[in-house]
Image (cartoon, rainbow, N blue to C red):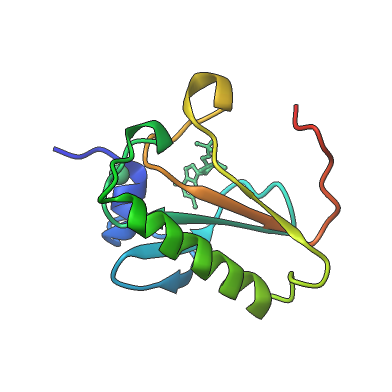
Length: 114
Ligand code: 5GP
Ligand code: ZN
């Protein structure tokens, strides 16, 4: 049994506004956007968190970062800039335990984070 919400999005069992998909990954709009552009990139394979990544699966993370840069360009974020975030574990603020990368853009983002 897999109750993972992001696996369900990857399997099209629950709807999401999908921006990009290939054999390895899917990118979709966050339900609760924190910026005018707020996308989530996930591997289709269930990996719980960055902490649980093994060497073999780490290849998909490079592919995800490449596609983040491509999609950011196609959305016109490359000139203004953007942020890519991974939250790991409780202190990192992770709420969904299927590894994902937030792409945030189209507004100035403050630093340090809260
Ligand atoms: P985390 O806090 O784990 O880094 O981020 C989880 C993100 O997933 C949050 O930004 C939250 O808004 C988003 N999210 C949670 N459930 C859903 C969902 O069912 N659909 C979509 N599109 N986003 C979701
Ligand atoms: Zn999952």
